[in-house]
Image (tube, rainbow, N blue to C red; front, side, top):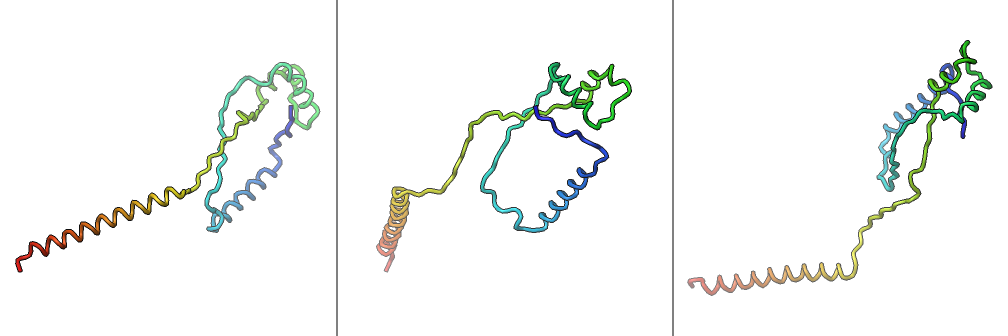
Length: 146
């Protein structure tokens, strides 16, 4: 179990970090070179579920943790600590769904057979058009009245 530091609403480091981040975003949006063409994408599937926390076996550890920190305790903590922990405790679990990695690669590829097929097709098309044009010219001269 990893114990993260508790939030302190009077600490302004959160606001300073947020302002610094927002200033960074506004400075980067001014420059055109900030958004290069995408070359890779990482997608994470997010699924959420919930359950009543903490579990009974975690209660004593959480109680001792809260009592040993600078969190102000209510006057009736000794009798209502279970209800207060259930009411105010939040657990976040980040779990890897799978270890399978899927790579999709796209590349333009033209083989020797493709090149020869394209050349043959274009040649046949233009030769056919040329022969039709020549035959139409011969027919036009043959039928002309002079």
